[in-house]
Length: 256
Ligand code: NAD
Image 1 (cartoon, rainbow, N blue to C red):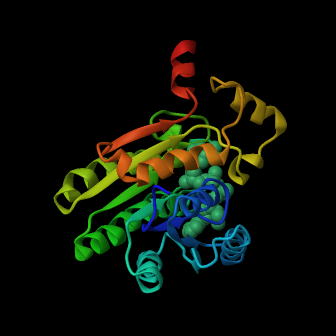
Image 2 (image 1 turned 90 degrees about the vertical axis):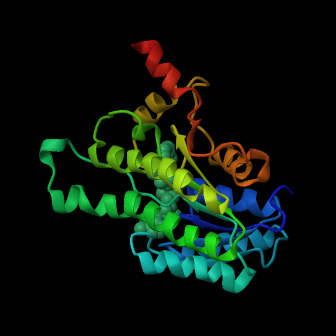
């Protein structure tokens, strides 16, 4: 129960890493607003949580993280329903891409930047303001990616947005420390979620072979780390990147 009494907003909480984190957070005693574009699926997660015996621990809200007013409203909902905010997990994201020279900027750049980059900025801003106004401090955890730290195939825009997430995290930690606010980015490797399950079995097995345990990471394994980062046990982890990639970066160095 290391998150007992804490209130969190989890964006992208209707699926994958976000969904696993919602379940982990409520098991650790938190109340959670599930802020997702897909309201129906977010409501299914609420029902799943209720069925586990944690009735009233979660609230679903339709949120498009690329719209600041939506993110602000998700934070406001946490305060309205649960009285405060302690943690935001800026996790909603979309993936995919084309070779750079095939890009149509209107299709292959701006829309992804709006979700994967602007969405995190909005989460930091809305939660940061709430933490400051509450006078309690808070924790901002944001999902980057291994691609935020390296070039990769078909990932020009995605890598840019995920690199921005790391930069936002450093700057937010630096600028908001005076309010008792911490910021941490995580870089998942290959996690078995719908975002990756769309790929062929061959590609998925290549992905798995690029991690040191030679398997996909389970979303629950990422959620365990996020719960630790959200807790007071990780108070000295601030402004940095926590690599949750099962040694992917070591693997790449080994090849070089
Ligand atoms: P997922 O597709 O299972 O979940 C993403 C969730 O985000 C969905 O519920 C979706 O409805 C929601 N979403 C999408 N656009 C949104 C928007 N504009 N506003 C609000 N919600 C929106 O994928 P996942 O793998 O759990 O991805 C979660 C995060 O992890 C993403 O930021 C992704 O880039 C990152 N990531 C995933 C992997 C992986 O291997 N799965 C690796 C590195 C990073």
